[in-house]
Image 1: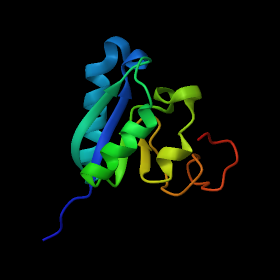
Image 2: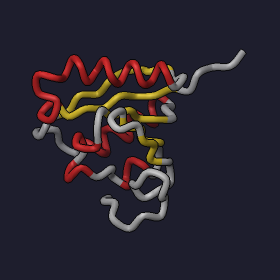
Image 3: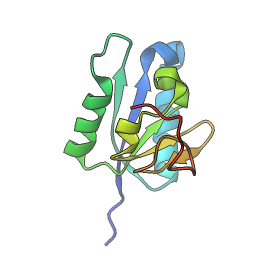
Image 4: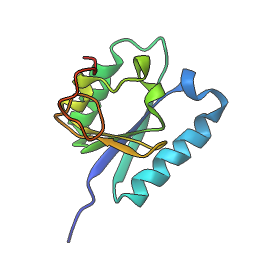
Length: 117
């Protein structure tokens, strides 16, 4: 029997604001549609210290293959952190894009120069 790959959701509640419940539904829906078993959604804000590190730890602990996020705006400067995409695929819901693990933070262009650590 085939086990679905595990995934985590991530959102910045300062970006979601009153849309947070909707953003969480978007994450759940996208993960299910793409065949992932969503373990949980991590919600951070501007006061969360070392959030990339904390997200990476959660990825390792859960064995997640992907992190779903509503939009890239949920990341600092709207750029997928290279420290995250180094260990897990990052999938945005709107627009639906996959930032492949091991890449530099650009969809379809793993060697892109403008990603941040």
